[in-house]
Amino acid sequence: MWRQLGLAVLIGVMGLAVPSGFAGQGLQRVTLHIEGMTCGACVKDVKAALAKVPGVSTVEITVGKKWGFLSDYADARALVTYDPDKAGVEALVKAVEAASSPLSAYKTRVLQER
Image (cartoon, rainbow, N blue to C red; front, side, top):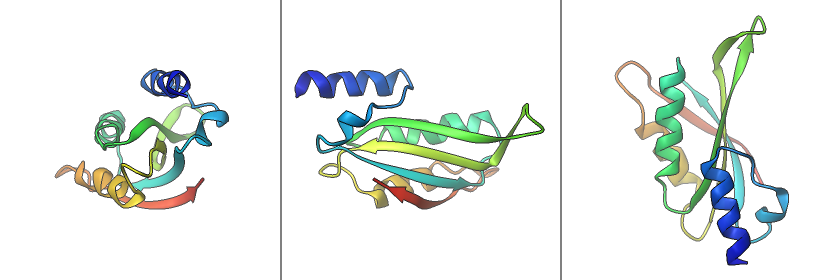
């Protein structure tokens, strides 16, 4: 189990999706919709804030596309894999909203928990 969990953490650090077999080992996933993001720096800040929450093993942020090549930050989503014994969804939401800056105020809502 430790070997597999270590692999999940390594995969998360690399920014890859965690294979579904890891989610059954005490880890849970949640998809968050994040409003207020305006640029790539926002993505970096939110990802860093979520990664600092104890128990978070992976963070993957996706943004929409406009006209096929421009990023649409209005449709930003974060897929977070975490240990529910160490962190809850409320802590993840607070981490995102605390990462707000004077130029970008983030609001977060849960889209899906697995």
